[in-house]
Structures are given as structure tokens and as C-alpha cells.
Length: 232
Length: 232
Image 1 (cartoon, each protein chain N blue to C red):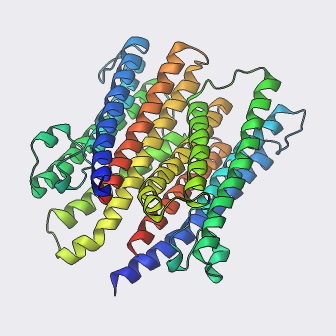
Image 2: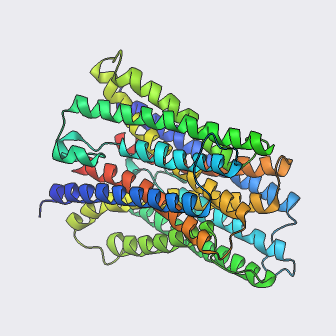
Image 3: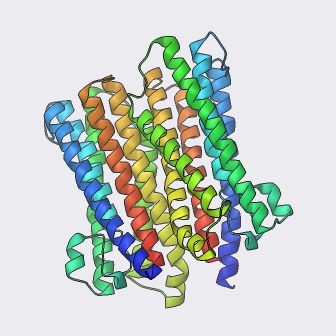
């Protein structure tokens, strides 16, 4: 079989795998937050419910949408959005989807970060002391800068084609590093929560572990689908 | 300026950056384990000293050597080993270095994992309950399998050139995913330790955070140096 066909088919399967693990992580996280941790509510008087907005929006909003917005090349007729597969879009439409999904993800991420600061206020805890907070905020700020740089390079005012294509390896490589940074932030966050809750051996601990593994596999499958698509 | 020259120069600088952050992470971790945590000793009666073998060997042995062993293409005359830069080696020698560095890293990793199991025995704790342990052991096992597959594909018995080059995108992509998985394992491990030690606001907590950031930057710079080298 032609090896380009193999890579294309692999990229397509990896994209489906990314969706599966992403959705599975959302389901597991919702079970965790709703069944074990009392629900998700920003304006609650219960600090636990305010806190729960943070993991929910940071993964189900920010990381999931950003991952969805990473689009394999248009000619493959596959896209990080499943709907796209049936309706192959023009390159400019794909770029717009890529940009808008990241923007929505960033907006939800801002609310998610605000939630954890509000939680710290409510329980009188200090902000920004943990490794999780350092990695998380660093990632979020750099991703915001990457979005701005991407916008000015590829949407408006759009410099020459030469400049745009010279920037592309940097845009792609930094984007991938940021994806893995976001995954690392999520995993350190789950690890911190699991340790603070002292859940050794409980079913809830295993639920958190499976959620973490699904988040990690989501990141890896998004990365691999894009990487293999480059060979197709 | 010719853009290939730009990518080549960038890859070279990123490689130097990877070395700097890798060495900095080792130094910070040694300060942490020796100054704050009572030293590193496998055969000690003090469980804390036995535990310290684990982070030391998993990063300074396993992850650092594996990262060093990820070699940008030979024609760039730069290599993940600094020494290599002055003595550009033939492709076969580079492959051997790549393979042997990973093998030494894996061997040190086995001792590092044994240390934490010994520590759990000493304090009567259960093994494999945390998200860190799940991610860490999964990564280590898959990396071992990747090493075996790489050995049989590229060293011995070495199938046809066509098969070898068809496998290369998979070898490279999985290798990169494993690098980030190992970094995620290290960061969740530091996060777990920092939370258990309840270090909020202490100088030691900031030391652990800086160690974690250096490990993350080491992983990112290794990835980016290889990625940019592909465009050079």
C-alpha cells in the first residue's frame, strides 16, 4: 500500500482517538466533580463548588477546545473538528475555526483561573505557591501571546507569504510545546488535588488517575495526528 | 539571510538551551535533596534518604540521558551531546550513541524505580496508588518497548531501507510523546512531594517549583531543537 495512504489513514485514526480520549476525560471529570465533589458553581457560597469550576473550565473548556482547534492540513479533508470531515472547508475557513476555537478556549480559561483565585479568597489561602500554579499561569500567558502573534502573522495585517511560511515551523513547534505544557499543568493540578484530598486507595483516586491518563492521551493523540498528517 | 541557516542556527541555540536547563535542573535538584532533604543513599536505614534516590535517578539519570540521546540530524554537525559538536561523528556512531544513552538511562531508571518501591516497603505504604505512579510506570514500560522496537528496526536485524524509513515518522513521533510523558511524570512527582511536605510559601517550595520549570524547559528545548533541525 502507498505509504502516504498509510500516514493519511493513521492521522485520521489518531484524530478519532484524540476525540475519544478528550470526550472520555470530560465524562470522567464530570463524574468526579458532580458525584464525588458536590457540583460546579461559580457564584456558590460553598468553596468546594467554586473550586470545581477551575478543573472543569481548564480542561473541558480551555485544553479541550484548544486541542480541537489544532487542525491537520486542509487537503487531508480531516480536521480536529469531526464535523469538518463531512464538510471539507476551504483553507481560510479552517484558519478561522482554528483561531476562534483558541479564542473561546482562552476566554473560558480566564473564567477558570478567576474561579481558583476566588476559591483562594474564600478559604483565605495564598495564590501562586504551587508548581501547578507556576506551570499553569506560565502556559496560559505564553499561549495568549502565541495567539496574538498568530493573529498578526496569519490573519491581520498578514505580512508577505515568505514571512508567513518562515514563521510556520515556529508557530507549529511552539503550539505543540504549549499543548504539552497545558497537559502537564492539568496533570500537576489533578496530582495536587488528589494528594490534598488524601485519597490513597479510594475509588475516587482511581477515577482521578483515569481522568489524568485520558487527558495525557488526548494531548498525545492530538500531537501524533498532526505529526503524521505532515507526512501524508 | 538564507532561512535554512536561520533554522540551523536556531536548532543549535535550542540545543544549547536544552543543555543549560537540563544542567540547571540537576543542580537545583541536588541542592533540594542534599541541603533540604538529608541526602541520597540507596542502602540507608533512613527512608527519606532511600526515597531521594528516586527523583535523583529518574531525572538526573533517566530523563536527562534520554534527552541527551535525542540527536538532531548528523549533517547539522550538532548533537544532543555537546562533545559531539567538536567531533562530528558518522551517522552509525551517532545512532550507537543514541541507542546507548537511552539504554544507560533505562538502566538508571530501573534502579530509581526500585528505590521508591523499597521506600514504600520501609514505611509500609502501598505502591502504585497515585496519578504520578500510573503515568510514570506507563511511560517507562512504553519507552522500554520503543527502545526494543527501535533496536530491532535500526540496529539488528535491520529490515530493508524502505521499511526503516517508513517507520521513522512513528519512531520520532512516539519518541517525542514519550519525552513529554516523562516530563509530565517528573512534574506530577514533584507536585506530589511538594504537597505531601506541605511547603506552602517556604523557600524549599520555590526551589522545587524552579526545579520543575527547568525540567519542563529541558523537555521543550529538546523537542524544539529536534523539530527546528528538521527544517534545516
